[in-house]
Structures are given as structure tokens and as C-alpha cells.
Image (cartoon, rainbow, N blue to C red; front, top):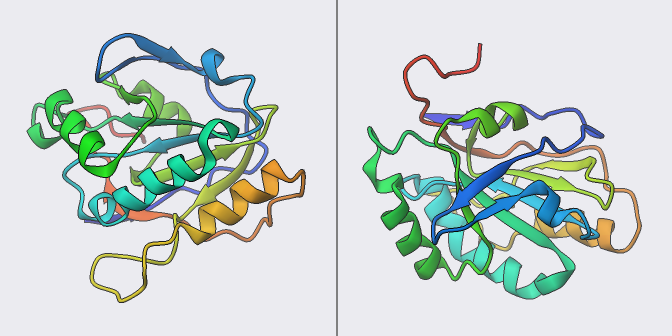
Length: 187
């Protein structure tokens, strides 16, 4: 079932995390703090909305390179959704050309802290790690004829990198609801 992002208030500080990466090691928010812009994106492998834009997200990462820190987080229950286990996430990363860390939120506490609702769900932070954008990648969705360009997210990233304010009118992301473990769904 499709879900929209919660549209967390702009200016909200990025919640701290320290998560295991699909290829081993760990990544924390502290590791990203020196970037002029940081993108935290909640993804999954099985969701058709993510699959629709995943190569575009890989291209976006390649285009911005070191000017933008990116981490992807999978918070889905991989026991009940095995396509979202580390092996399948690694296959997705290779397929989509992801060059950024892909992290596992097995407890789902990070998704709750960020108020992530769906996959994909994008959270862009400025150099002070304050939320400046939460919304769609672009208007492309499975089944519509719009090309995957990342134009909505790219416009926000460009504004941050250029020192301009990001417009406050933002369209929510739309995707598959996060697959919560029993008893973990936010109230």
C-alpha cells in the first residue's frame, strides 16, 4: 500500500545514528558532519517505487560526488520481507550504481527517529545538519509517463550547495510503507 512521507518540520536537526553497512563496518551521522549537504534516504529493495527511481538515485550520487554526503538506510523487517535482507540490498546497490553506504536499521529505531514513513523517503540536511528538504525525488511514479530525473531533490541540493534557501513548498515522497516489525509501528 502506498504511503506519503510525514513531512517532518523544516529545521529539525538530524537524529544521530550509528548503523552497520551491508558490506560491513559502520557509519554514523558523526561521519557525515563535515559535508555542506547530507542526504539520508530510506530505501528498500522490493518496493516498486524505489526500483522505479533507483538508477536515477545512483546517477544523482555520481553527479554530485564528494559535494554531497549520502547514506541509504533500510529499516524494513527483512524476516517477513527477505528481499530486503543484506544480500538482496547489495544486489540492488550494484544494479543501481549506488556508491554511498547502505545501512541496516534492524531495530527500526532510526526510522522512528527520522519519522520515515515510506520507501523512498528523502531527508536533506544543510551543513548544520538541519532539515531543509523532505519530499519527492521527482514526479515520476511507476505507471506514469514522467521521466526519472530527480529534479525536485536536485533543485533542493543545488540550493543548499549554492547557499540559497530551499523553497518551503515541497511535495511529499510516495512509496511503499515501511515494513514494521510486530509492535514497532509508530503510534
